[in-house]
Image (cartoon, rainbow, N blue to C red; front, side, top):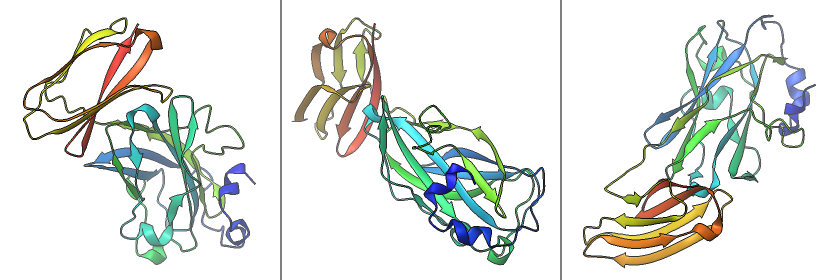
Length: 259
């Protein structure tokens, strides 16, 4: 058995279910898409399938410094019946990244749930609301590939490994500019930061390194005119930083490059 089943407590039950309809060359690919403030995880079979989606496992990665969060996973329609999916443990941290592993385990055939997968079509198996502005990615990387992390994408049909590819790995969340100035950028760590305000914004700012260290923090509150500050973060060294701005509860992020 593969190591992926270490996330699934009912392995023995899967092996007792029917394996008669698996096709030798059949695979299921997976992709990550954006729908408003939700991530969509879509499965794409290479052949028609109406049997048992025994198991699925995947991992989403994002930069910790952005402050983004993944909220409770949601499932709609038949997918909630034939492949219930949930978080497998908490958020893991490695280098500048956060990782969240998800695992699902199916007991009902897809056709018993009232549907059939068609070759080449996409099927939403999970929706994950998120906060913040992050580049979320569905990944197989050095962290997921470690045995103890066991986070590489995996899918089983009728008890057989039918893992395909990650055909769309991620989404790039839009940055809300609203006239924010970081000049110059890139810099050697000295720059002028300007943030327009409208007199109604309850403003708070943080600059966070890729390692998650908060190197600057300010909460001026409501301002009648533009926030302006001469910044010097040279002592923290070269690298990528994230400016995180909170206005009236909404969060936006901007990248700062120190050379």
